[in-house]
Image (cartoon, rainbow, N blue to C red; front, side, top):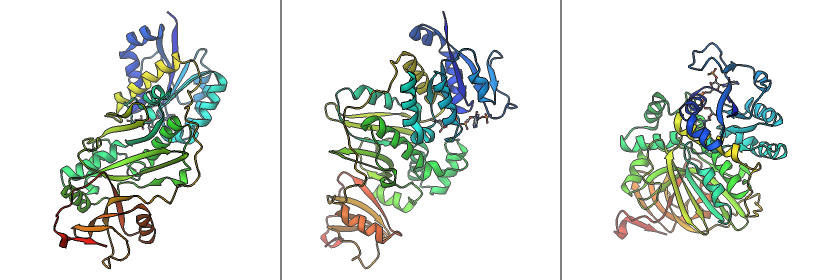
Length: 412
Ligand SMILES: NC(=O)c1ccc[n+]([C@@H]2O[C@H](COP(=O)([O-])OP(=O)(O)OC[C@H]3O[C@@H](n4cnc5c(N)ncnc54)[C@H](OP(=O)(O)O)[C@@H]3O)[C@@H](O)[C@H]2O)c1
């Protein structure tokens, strides 16, 4: 039986998980692919580190050694940062290899170029692991895109942020305490900016937008807010209303308009994201025939991510090359529609005491300087622009009033 020769770039959490899974699942891989899979080489940064790698495997710090291998079919990339990963994958495609990546930051920036290059070269690209770890959201979208038209995708795409929000609520801890615990447990990096400021979820949302709609909104038009603005007081106020904070990425295709946001949203018990806790990820896909599909599972970690990559390995080896294009024929506008005026519920912290700065339908004080408000989107947008010190969080769905006492409700 001939072999599929694979190189793995990186031997950290993801790279090692892939290596070990290729060993542990050699039999089913060979049965499905009709060939065994052999790891020919591994690229690392520091060759002095002790690693459990078979002596037959070339371990190198020089990518040129990998390109010089006499046989090479697939390059799996699991290193960090946009560069040198992008350059390595370009060279791998030029060499005629299928590529697979887990690197969302690189793929959000350069994915389209890699897909086009791969198409010309007649090779395939796997990137399931870039979004929601072990959850097969990209494969699901590929399946759906034959006839279904996707209208909206929403997701909890960053397990670290979801873990911190869960800890803050369950243990009544501060953001700082919960972040420290996430770091101690290995869920958050020493520099957590990418996770807690929403960049990681933003990159994933743009990758999902590209596959579901064949386009991305202008990155400058995407509202991106992380979870650092959420205080214990806000979490407690939300609990009083039966709501939970979730950091949600949303991409919506409405006619010709493609809009996206990545920000904290309050959800009630009836919302499928309400019960998604800890490091779990979840994705809702709304499409015209099937309706809503919810996918939930581990968004990161050694073996969930290896699972996505191994499934991609089968996909790229079996694929007639070329990414399936969505049939939606979307022409994205460059600017969002500011005429949106629908009324909605908001939790607002820092409403000035004059009460006149925001035109509301009604408002109710939940706790000190935290208000439940019913107001139009346009008024809220104007208010936020004029009051950067105030924070407004949308509530997804209806809420029950804390009291029906008219004296406690200020109608305007
Ligand atoms: N961790 C997860 O659960 C997860 C889930 C989905 C996607 N991802 C993505 O997968 C990628 C890898 O994540 P990870 O958690 O496995 O990272 P990691 O544990 O920090 O490992 C990174 C690996 O890449 C190697 N490396 C870094 N820069 C390199 C360079 N310039 N040249 C060669 N090797 C280099 C490192 O080599 P040394 O060992 O020699 O230092 C290390 O083996 C990232 O893009 C991440 O966003 C991670």
